[in-house]
Image 1 (cartoon, helix red, strand yellow):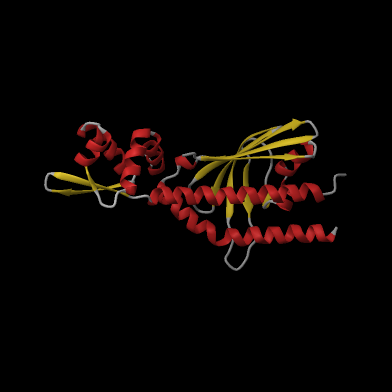
Image 2 (tube, each protein chain N blue to C red):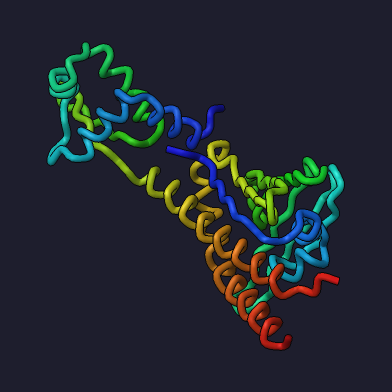
Length: 143
Length: 109
């Protein structure tokens, strides 16, 4: 059984544009999650999902690597002490960019804590994602 | 202190242990160490060692009756792990879709 999630996606956009989207606070806040973020090694970042009636989740961590075009940071949800790692790797290809996302480290979780994390996470998160989707839809419609 | 999920991965990483665990999952009743030993043609000692690893990972319950120990499977730890994976699979799919939408619509000045 695997203990990491790997996603690959091709974009027909230049690598620099995607690098900015994943590494600049303002852009991260637009498409992903409200971010206090700097693509600097050791920067302690905070992601805050939009509040709703169930409350939302805070994610924080430390930037481990931020050299174009690799961005890695630890991922700690809310009040848990469970640390996983998220790594974005970009590669220029003909006609665009290949993005690889890796989320690893579940195997370093303490079992019971992982379960607790789920429970604290699930409540707010779905709603926040929905909020984000709606926000993006509005953005698109507004244009 | 070795944590549980690490133990879980260690337990299911070994093919023979996966086989034993699978046999316990599909068995209609608990299996004794002797039964497992006969079924897999490995020594009682070998089975005992594998079972201990599975037990440490929370994947097997052991019930001692007289001189024999009966083992049954507990798949719950794997379900929790699956749940975590499934959640983040969806989460990142959604997020990358959002990124795609964002890149396609944002002003590229």
